[in-house]
Length: 358
Image 1 (spheres, rainbow, N blue to C red):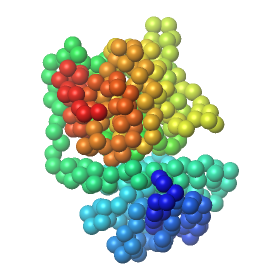
Image 2 (image 1 turned 90 degrees about the vertical axis):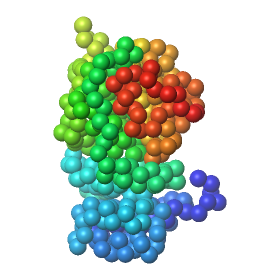
Image 3 (image 1 turned 180 degrees about the horizontal axis):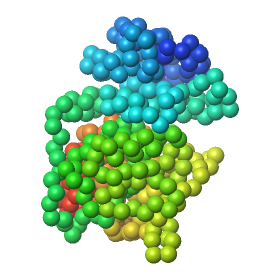
C-alpha cells in the first residue's frame, strides 16, 4: 500500500480491557493503520460498526450481551466488513465456525502471559492487517449466500485416466472455507490422496483436520511423522511446521521439519508442492486457492517440471487473488477455475477442465 494511501481504519472488539489495550498498542505502531474505536461487547460493536463503517474489525468471539457469532451474522448481512478473529481458544472449533459465518482470518490472542511471544504476534497481526486491502469482501458475501443453497455434489463415476493419484492444495486467507466447500462437495471420497497446506497457526490445524473429517466424506487428520498418504484421506500440514515426504523402505511417508527464523510461512506451500512433485511426479495435481502473498509460486513450477498438473482458483471466486495470481503468472498453470469447478478436476483430472484466463 502506498504511503500516501488512507490508513486502514480498524475497530477493535474485545471484552477484556487488557486485550483491547494490547491490540490497540500493536496496531498503532503501524503508520498504515488507524484504530478508530473499540467496543467491549457485541451490541456496542454492532452499533459502532454501522456508525463508523471501519475497513477492518478485530473480533473476540466470547463477549457479553451478544456473542461473536451473532455479531458476525448481523454484520455480514447489514454491513459486510473484513473481520479477523483474535482468539485464545486454540484447537477448538469456535474459530472455524467464525470462518463459516464470514470471518476472513484469525490469529492467536495476546494474553498477560504472552511475554516473549508478543513480538511474533505483533508481526503476524500487522502483516494480516496491512494485506487487507487485497481482500474482496464481496467474495466472502457471495460465498455465504451460496452456502444457503444445496451444494452441487460431485457424484461417484468412472475414473478418468487423467485423474490424479495425489492432490496437494495450498491456501491462506479465505482458504478454510474454500477447502471445506471443495472437500464437502463429494458424495463419497474419491480414490485420491489429499495433502493440505493451509497457512494456520500452531494449535489450530488439528482442529481443522477434525472438522474436515467430521463434515466431509474424507478421513482427515493432522499429519504426523511417518504418515502415508492413502486414497480417500486428507493429511493437513501442522501449523508452525513444514510438511515434506521421504522414502522409507517401500513406503513414501510424511516427514515434519521445524520452521526456521527466516521462514515467512510455516507450513509452506512451496515445500509441500516440491516434495510431492519429487515423489509422485506426473501423478500429482497441485491446486492453489485463495490467499495473500506468493507461497506456491515456486512449488507449481516444481510440479510442472515433474510432469504433474496445476490448477489455480480464478479471480471470480478467490477472496484474495494473491497466491493464485502469482501461480498463474508462472505460465505453468493448466486451468484457472472458479471454486465450484475444482472438485470436478480432483475427480476426473484436467482433461475435463477448461483453461481460464491468466
